[in-house]
Length: 157
Image (cartoon, rainbow, N blue to C red):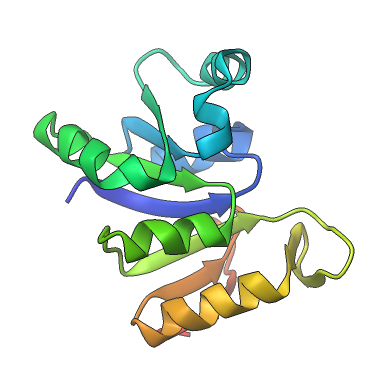
């Protein structure tokens, strides 16, 4: 499987991903699964500017991740899958894309959300998604960078 990291981060592509996670995982592809972003060429180009030219960037809809990962796998690329929400990550998992760990790096504050860690705020939907992942054997870790200990939920935490 070509996936080296599955990450939920409402910012999607940004410095933490490019400067820490890409080198740490050895990834050479960023797969951004976001239905809204697919139709926004301006925001896609802004995100692509933050990525070195040797890193392949692919944008797709959430329901296309399985097919796109097959293409990435055929090219023998190592991909980081980026989702903006835990609901998107869960939808991808339910569509048959399997992974054993999920990293949550940043979920912005909104009314009704609870702070889990600095820069990570959970809604009821986030708690339900984490519970579902845990029930399916997926270890969920709240960790901004690979150099932090983080907080774990699920079978390994």
